[in-house]
Image (cartoon, rainbow, N blue to C red; front, top):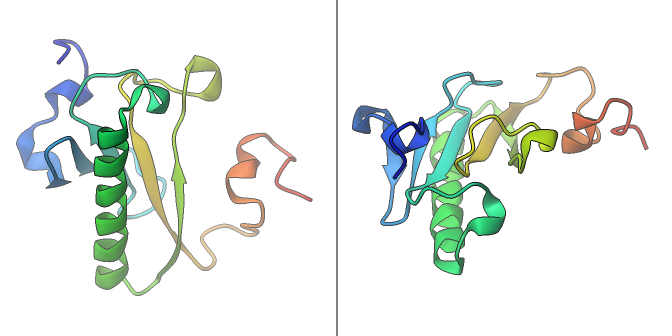
Length: 125
């Protein structure tokens, strides 16, 4: 636990789901409704520092959240799962976190390419 880390100091009231090694919150700056973050409890920089046990714990939360979101909002018919690793990749909080972003038909003009659109023009193939 790091004293100055936002994700090491999340108020328990924000946690929507958790297990022994990870927890989930709704994103404070969501790109879609119910955009969530899955965060390991241990302070580590990024995905590549996760242990096998932490990977499994995070995956369990991703799957549970996906089901919860799908069951509570029938307009959700797709998801993006993503993470940023390193400043060059856009990481701004250096505590590993995984984005689960619910998607709805029509939320963007052309969703083709999905996460490939991180680099402008690379989603078109």
